[in-house]
Length: 355
Ligand SMILES: NC(=O)C1=CN([C@@H]2O[C@H](COP(=O)(O)OP(=O)(O)OC[C@H]3O[C@@H](n4cnc5c(N)ncnc54)[C@H](O)[C@@H]3O)[C@@H](O)[C@H]2O)C=CC1
Ligand SMILES: O=C(O)CCCC(=O)C(=O)O
Image (cartoon, rainbow, N blue to C red; front, side, top):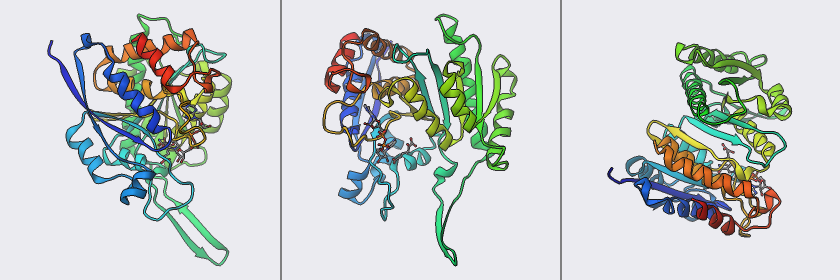
């Protein structure tokens, strides 16, 4: 078998992104030669520091290199300000749209890190909803009024639900040869169409239509209104297998689910389009812990594995998941968010040893 070389963009961004992305690079470089996989890395800029230095939070060069040269990328996190800054707009939100990375896949799983076993995947639509960021503010006799467009299209809703169905089938196949807490594949469609009957209503009907395809006949389909979804998710997280949600609800649900498994520092994601995937930890730039070498690198390491899964390298991905799980199961070298004392570097080294 010949060696496959993957060109991977590395975009640390800001804050702890600069600490966890080098860990992701080290991990990929340490994969065993028997996998016949090589990596060619290219360093790329994005984020608030890039904005301050170059005037652009997402330089065109970053998008061009990703689009024209790379098969995948690892993205750390960016420090987007919570107040409006003229000329600044979230680069990760823009990147997802510019590369049409229409799915944000977020597996949330316990390995002895929570009271209840949890094994779910949140499949979040990644290009529209309120994230189209078409906001306006106008003056009225009663004062300022701000409005934002929530765009939901049939096409994007249909394809994200189909992705959720495909993931449910893939997980079912994996379960045939491994123990699981789930007895059958299940997709839960999340929305608020009791109030937003047009936008979330369209998400609901398009999702149901996509999942009515006979190829998903073995998958149970249910729906859940997003507020009670949070309630049930927190009370019975073990019931959920695959959750499909519009962009904003998916973002919020996945941070909540991260709390259930013990830390945001554990939860990975992949931004997935046709033949391209960006691995990205679910967490942000964590300014409260940046520069201390205590950020949990596991979300990023798992994101690298998830990227490899979507680049058709399941064997390499499985090796990474197993090494991470072994680190968590032993529980000796854990970062402070999991109650341990290990530094980022110590956790990374322990996981590399186990590869
Ligand atoms: N994809 C991205 O680039 C994202 C960027 N952000 C940005 O991050 C900045 C900070 O946002 P926050 O709301 O504070 O969310 P955050 O996710 O950065 O941090 C929330 C809490 O989780 C902790 N945490 C996060 N990642 C961790 C890790 N790997 N190990 C240990 N602890 C970890 C932090 O210390 C903090 O207490 C903001 O500027 C926001 O815009 C937020 C979410 C996603
Ligand atoms: O801070 C930013 O620039 C983006 C944060 C958005 C976010 O949490 C997500 O979409 O995953």
